[in-house]
Image (cartoon, rainbow, N blue to C red; front, side, top):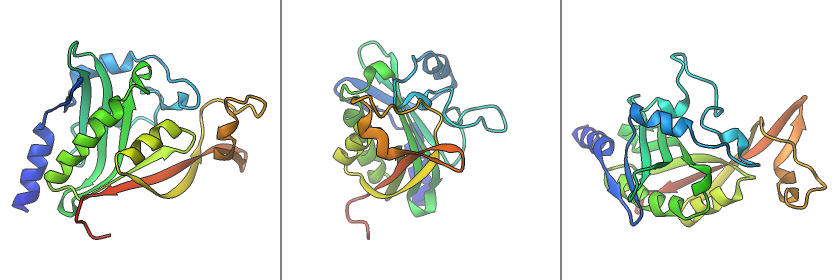
Length: 208
């Protein structure tokens, strides 16, 4: 128990610097800058920070609940300007089991595809493993190939899939730029649904 308590405290306080960024614990002062991010392009337009999921009972969105005991949220800043360009949210943490049940990752749309994900995600995961976390899980839209390919490069593997309600734009089968996504969308019981992958990574030496 003492070890898990130490893990919990160090996890919350840990800063991390990479070649181009600083990753630090989130605070409420970060919210205005994050809310001002531009919208995401298709097929990720439903992932906007004001549109992701329903507000909690207190009116906050999932990424604003940074003070919950089973969560740890981090903000990614550019090292030279301190602009906020990313958010990591580890949720449903089981401290005694060393388990992160899910996580959310967002980078400012104009910063996507520029290597910031791999640059910050890999060392952040390694730091968490060093502090006692043994298994991290996440879900990702199957149509967001850039994201799940990035997670694979960081060591995650796909373990399953599920379908969830889709609030983004329609997929035009005649558009060659969107044809790749057709298998990941469908209509079921009158609802538009999208395929998601479950992915996970284990700490080195963990039992499978």
